[in-house]
Image (cartoon, rainbow, N blue to C red; front, side, top):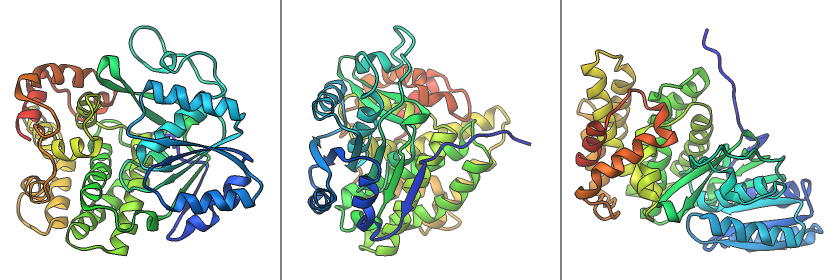
Length: 379
C-alpha cells in the first residue's frame, strides 16, 4: 500500500457568504492584526469595520503585484513596528503569498533571502510563525492551502519559494462570492492556473491516493466551469472554480507539480503573470510528456484520462482534448508566449533554468533540454 502524509490548513471554512464570519474568526486568533490586502477588494473595508468593532487594532499593507524580496522586508518591518500577533491576507495569490511570508518570517532572525533555496548555502529554518488567515478573492492559485510562498528575486530574474509545512494557513476562509464578477481575463488566467495545478499534481511522479482522489473529482468539473464562465457569469461555476482552486492547493502541497511550473518560475521572474504562463504552456507540456513516455514505453493512462476530461469539458467529446485546450485558450485571447515577453532566442536558456527548478523534480518523466525547448516551441 502506498504511504503518504497530508498537509492542509488547520481549519477551512468554505461556502458562499462565509465571509460574514471572518471578523470573529480573526479576533479569536489575535487582536493586533497585520492586514495584507489587494488593491481592488472593496469588501475589505467592511472587514476592517467589523474587526474594529471586535476590539482589534490594525495596520494595513497593500499588496501590489507578486511579492519580491523588498516587498517582504517592508511588510515585516510594518508588522514589527505594530507588534502584530496575527496576519490576515485578503486578495489573490500574491497577497496571500506575501502574508504567508510575513507570518513565517516575523519570529525568525536574519533576512528573507537566507530562508530561500538559492543554491549558495542551505536555507535557514524558520521559527514558529504567527497565526495566519488566508481569504482568497480569486479562484486560481490555491495559495490558501499551500505550504509555500512564492517570492520574486529580481537580481536573478526568477521566483523562489519559501517553504515550510508551518506556512500552511491556520484558517483558510474561502467564499466564492468574493470572486463574482471578476474580469474575464483574470477569470481565465486564474482558472487555468487551478486546472494546471490539478493536472500536474495528478500526472506527476509524487501523486498519492489522497491527491488522486482530489484531482479526479475536481479536474473535469473545473474545466467545464471555466468554459461556462467564458460564456456567461454563473454562480455555480464560480463556486466550482473556488473549490477547484482550494483543492489544487492541497494537491500540489502533497504531491508536486512538473515542467509547466518549473518554466513558469523562470518566465514569471521576468514579470509575466503566472496563471497566463501556465495556461499557455499546459497543452504543449502534456503533449511532450506523453510523447516522451510513449517512446520510453511508459504508462500513459493518466494522460489519456486528462485528454478525455479536456475534450468533454470543452464540449468536443471524441476529439483531441489537447487540441481543444489550444483552441480554447486562443479563442479566449490568452496572451501568447511572445506577448508574455518570451522570444525564440531565449528558449534554450529558459529550458535549462526550468529543468533546474524545484517544481520540475516531480515531472512525470525525465526531460532534457531538447524536450523542454519543444514545450516552448509548441505553445
